[in-house]
Structure formats: structure tokens, C-alpha cells
Length: 351
Ligand code: NAP
Ligand code: ZN
Image 1: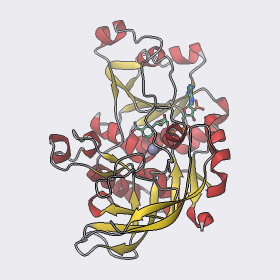
Image 2: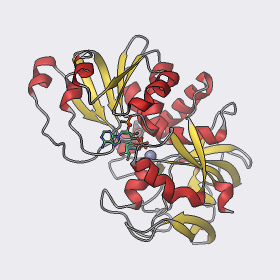
Image 3: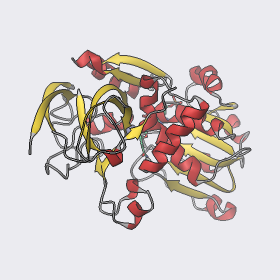
């Protein structure tokens, strides 16, 4: 199929630095939108993928799934977008559209496997997909989002993953005025969870290991910060929360957080993928009808709902703008939890 070469930034191996490379993008097919990428957020999943933390990374890999930009070309049958529109693309660029999950707007749980924005398999070319650390991307219009005009475009980029990943569990577990929500970890996902839960009217507590982040967390909207390494602070919130969103990327003991759930409360893991260690103790779960659950990103309709909510409530991410060439140093800072609170790449730097 007809393709165009575009500049990108990616990696050839788990231990290699990201560097400039050329990739092929398909030319628009009738239902496609071609987007000139203006900004791309840097998610911890980009780092996990670049370094093959989860296994299964195909190299070369081009990360980036918090994409915002301007429509530069459209296919003949595109009806949702026109050239010049400001749009976003998150973690999903395709799904089967026919399975039970897709029919319920749950493309993230597509029973035939959704196509990831990167490290997925493009149904058009049969080849691997490449993410937003690049000049342009071509996406079926059904997987492209409208960005509310009042939002700062660069600061809206992280909504496409960090935003919807925390929005989806807040909605699924029915967070509303008066709900008691806690968030574990103040990074990209964590700071969006605070803002969105506050926007929905919840009272919000942050669990963090980092006392230096207390003032920021309060400014972001947290009513309270609990330093998770301080046992007496942890005890002071025993039995308190209806919902805990745990964004920690690496294995950690979740038993101390389960103890802070209210009767029938739920701790939802969105950060760490893998076996828990130490084991999860079922006793407090059984005796308090508590749940430990998981959740992955959100569907396309839900992503648009979240973007519209953010437009209405003026919610965006707190960002630190970087040039594409700074990406390797930014990954190192992310590993030290030194991000305030999302890196966003100014894609003009790749030109
Ligand atoms: P991030 O910006 O690096 O933030 C993670 C935060 O977790 C850190 O700021 C830190 O907060 C805390 N933390 C880090 N390492 C820790 C450790 N070893 N023990 C305890 N706390 C730790 O990462 P992110 O972009 O928000 O992503 C978080 C995780 O979610 C990643 O694993 C990512 O792959 C995953 N993710 C999942 C989905 C999904 O759909 N489920 C979507 C996007 C991302 P404090 O300094 O406050 O302790
Ligand atoms: Zn992400």
C-alpha cells in the first residue's frame, strides 16, 4: 500500500537510547485522518515498552500514545473531521468493532485484541504500529478524538492516556459528590486522578512516598496527603476510602492500602502489571467485602466524554515541555519519580 516516510524517534533495542529514525506511514485510506503531530505526552508505558519491561516489544519501537495535532489530510469518506481540526489520539488506533466489548464501546477490552497506537499490528499494512514520537500519524477517524477548543493543546495531550486511564475507573466505580477517593503515587496518572476525582466532587487523598510533593498535591486539589512509608499516618486513614486508584508502576505491597478501604471499597490497580508480591491477604477482603481490581485505559466514547468534561471544567495536565532530543534524559528522570507531572514533547523540535 502507498506510504510516506516521516521522521520519528525510537529505539532499536531494550538497552539502546532512543534516536532519530525514519518510519513509513500509510497514506490516507477512505476512512483515515492524517494528523500533523504538534505535541506528544510521555507516559511511563512508553518507557516500559522501549525497555521491553513487559516482554513483547518489537524493534525498532516508536513510543507515544498521548498525541495531539492538526488534521492535515482526510480520506474521501471521513465525516467527523476536516482539515485544520485540532484532534487527539490515545492508546488505541483500531479494534474489531464487532465483539461484545466493542459493541458496548469498550474497545480497550476488544475480545479480538485492540490495535495499540504503538507495538500493535496495523490491519491495513500487516506491519507494526508506531507511536506519536513522530511528525505524522494516520488513524481511522473512529479512533480520533476532538479536543475542546478552550484547552491548552500541549497540556491536553496527557488526557489521551493518563486522563482516560484514571477517568474510566472513577466512572465505573461511580465516583460522585461526596465519594472518598485515594490515589497512590503522584506522577502522570496520579495527578490526573486527583484533578478528575475533584472535578467529580469527591474528597481526595494522595498516598505518596515523597514528602516533597505534599504542597504540589494540595495545589492540584488533594484534601490530604498520607506519606505511605509512615505507619502512623497509614493507620490514621484505616477503613476510609470508597475507591483507591493505585498508579505505582512497579511491584509493591498493596495490603497496607487494602486496610484503608471502607466496607465494600475497591482498590483498582492501573499501574503495575504482574504477580503481586507479597501475596494479597484475603482476610480483610472477605471480612470487609473489599475488592482488588484492575482497569486498562478507556473506550473511545469514554475518552471523548472525559475530554468534554475537562473542557467544561478546564482540566488539563501539569506539564514540563521538552524537545524530542531530551527524551532519554526524561526517561531517567521518570525512573526517579522526578516528573512534575507529565513530560510533553514539542514535536516542532523533530523538524
Ligand atoms: P509516573 O509518572 O512515573 O508516576 C508513577 C508514580 O508512582 C511516581 O511518581 C511515584 O509517586 C510512584 N512510584 C514510582 N515507583 C514507585 C515504587 N517503586 N514504589 C512506590 N511508588 C512508586 O508513571 P505514570 O505515567 O503515571 O504511569 C504509572 C503506571 O501506570 C506505569 O506502570 C504505566 O505503564 C501504567 N499505565 C497503565 C495504564 C492502564 O491503562 N492501566 C495506562 C497508562 C499507564 P510518588 O513519588 O508520589 O510516590
Ligand atoms: Zn500511557
